Length: 441
Image (tube, rainbow, N blue to C red; front, side, top):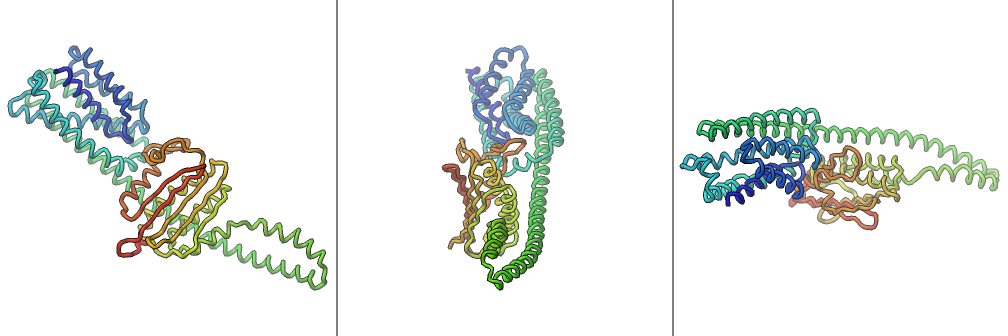
């Protein structure tokens, strides 16, 4: 019976230590770690005692490094998960020791051990399960952007503290976990975990503020690019007007002399080639005149120009004037920037090279339809929104679509639909009017 309870305790150790990873840890890797840990404990536990703890940490760190992305951060989170497991252990064992049940009795009595494991599960697993999901949704996207050097320094700091805590645990086991040792270890562990959480919160807050500043700077850059383009278009219009007058003057000479063969030759050799070079790009860009919201117009303009420079076949559908949207401009620009960047890159990698954007006004709000050609997608659509997943090559973090979903989940009037069929990837962003029909733009 005691052996079964020990197996349950070992599984809890693995489950809690691996519950805070950037992406949800696979059960297969957890079972691997658990199986190795059990083998070590049952074969060497009687000989090594609490020396098993550093072996577990080392084993967990190695498996984390070889089986996960964002390795440095996941190692830190593995160690912090172990800290929480140890602290929750003290939260249970100290009250039991106060009422007359020391650790030695708990470990040797099946009934006490069962009560301990049940209490430990309630204290440790429930907070871990609730907090890990929220951390992945709201905190980890910013943490993944921490510079690698800062991640390494944090990892070294946490690892050193792990060594100190392991030493205290081993020292306490040699003295049968006396009262003073238990309280000292529990206090030190709790203080350190609180300090670590404060540090991570400050890092998250700093990264979040930096992200907002970057988005604001990108929006200003888009506006500047748009105004510069308007000036360039104005200059091109003046040049075209001058050339247009010259063309009319030349044609008038042929008409006055009634030289129709020469006029036909001039038209076929000069005017038609010039007109063929004037593609539909200006017509596409010109449709943005119906967009009266400068932030939206600028992000669309920049991405359309970028896609044209990549040689994509671009089309835009925009029939009615858009003057107000019930959504914050910064969040909308962030979402559209990610969706359009993904659409452009996917279209460039496909054979069709097409991109279509439609802004459709409806009674309930605005529908932004983004459709692009794409290479075959072999994974479920839902997986595209998981943090860490990316179809791009190279050092991409894979949090773009995850960040889009995180923003949309905070907006009750904004919905995103995704579909893929026959080489066409479609994203539809629906922005419904606010209850009082008040535009946030």
